Length: 199
Ligand code: IMP
Image (cartoon, rainbow, N blue to C red; front, top):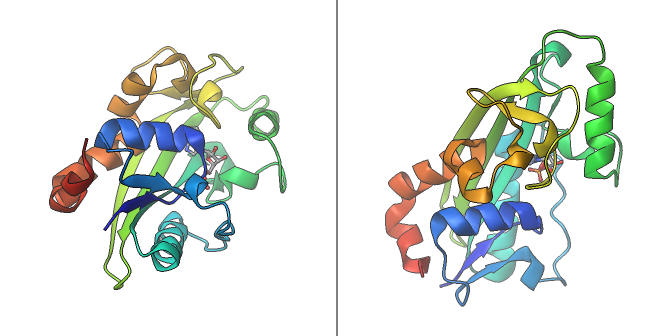
C-alpha cells in the first residue's frame, strides 16, 4: 500500500517530505489526484479537519493518508484566526491578504503573542485513525520579513529567535515549528507504519 500526503499545499509538502525522508516513488500527494475535489474544511477544530481530510483521501485512493491542519492563534484576538487561518481575509484570499488583515487587526496593540498549532492525522481505508498535535509559541512581527516558507511565515517570530519563519531554511524551520514538532513525534509514535515509505 502507498502513502498519500493529503494536501495540495506545496509548502507543507516540502516540509513533510523533508522530515519524514519519504520515497517519492511510493509517496504521492493530493496534487497527483487532480480529479479528486478539495476536501471541504468545515469542522470547527484543527483535529476535526485533519481527520476529515485524511479519512476522505484514504477512502478515495485506498492509500494510507497523512493530513495536516494548522492554524495561528493570536492572544490579543482571542485565539483568532485559529481554525479559520486559511480564509481569514475571505474566500480565495492570498497569503498576503491574510498577513495584511492580521497586521491591521493588531495595529496599535502591544501584546503580539501567538501560537502556531498543527494537527497531523494518519488514517487508512479500514478506519484506523491517529492524531498528533504540535505547537510553536512566538509573536507577530510589526512588518513582514523573509521569502522562505509560506502563509503567515513572514510575520511569525518563533520564541528565542530575532527573525521570522520566512527567514529560516526549511530544515531550520522544521527543527522548531509546530509541524516539525508534530512530525518528529509522528516518527516516534507511528515509525513502524511510516518507515515502510522511507527512501
Ligand atoms: P491549513 O492547515 O491549510 O488550513 O492552513 C491554515 C492557514 O495557515 C493557511 O493560510 C496556511 O497558509 C497557514 N499556515 C499553515 N501552516 C503554516 C506554516 O507553517 N507557516 C505559515 N503559515 C501556515
